[in-house]
Image 1: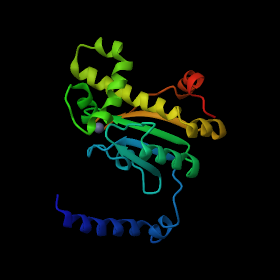
Image 2: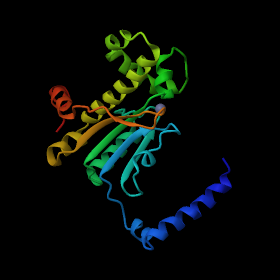
Image 3: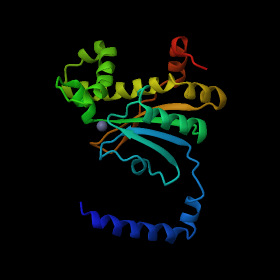
Image 4: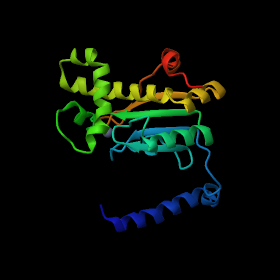
Length: 208
Ligand SMILES: [Zn+2]
């Protein structure tokens, strides 16, 4: 990748935007009002806006290794709180992807240094769903399923937060779990029953 090309690309991009609307950047500078918070993986193949066809201003984005929502991660929790309480998004998406290197690493026994505590959270997902996962003989299918279950558990982690519980009660905010298939480009909705999980876990995690 030629980094000089980046600035040429940027000029061409500005031109293409101004061709459609000559006040495009004037409007963009006025502020943001996104409807959606997207939490995805840092993987270079899984872009946030591009795969959804979203434009600047439409999606608030957070990406980390394996799209994790960890309660003591100040970074993701700040993003969630800002998006829900201040930007008033009405939807939060956790988007995982097949062939996720973070999930793969958590399936193997290796000391990865600073990554150990991060991947530990994915190993916990494996432990919670051990029965289902060990019953799958095909390693690829097991890997795909762990990707899906990890998305589901991160959605559950979102539901455990006071910000999400309060926004659900006040304005019907919803949490969605998606998987991006890097082999086909297809975005798959796992159709996570958000309200069922919410009611199931509220008994223990009710905060608001
Ligand atoms: Zn990944």
